[in-house]
Image 1 (cartoon, helix red, strand yellow):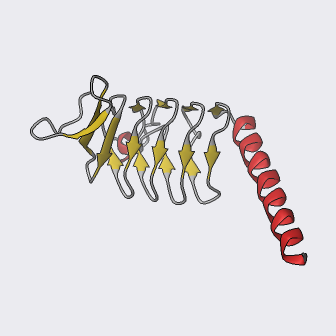
Image 2 (cartoon, helix red, strand yellow):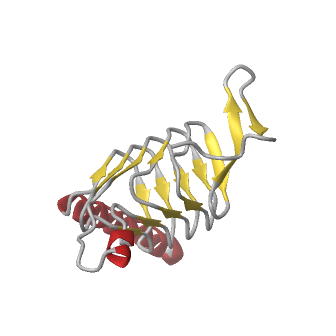
Length: 157
């Protein structure tokens, strides 16, 4: 009986902490949809840009979502990098330690594999993996089946 009470208490506390985390991210400017889970180990950058995350998404531990790039600073000392607009659409799963660079759009119902580095836009209903991330599967709406991608493995801007 006591184990059940502790389990219930742990779940309640975890839910409360998640709500606080989402509230804090919203407070600093991250736009977050309903029923989205963001791990405490995930890092979302809003220093100079904007990040929008849709509904029903899951962002796992170690993920980094960037809204700006420091490349300008490296190439031109003294330059201030401009903020970007990074969009994670609805029903997206981002695997552990994945990195989404600035000015990227991850389409609806997509999956970003663990450790992927997303440098270009991800089309809806796609699975991407690798460094740089490449489309490895797409959902065929005619057959309702995920199909491997043979030749067209590059992402398009």
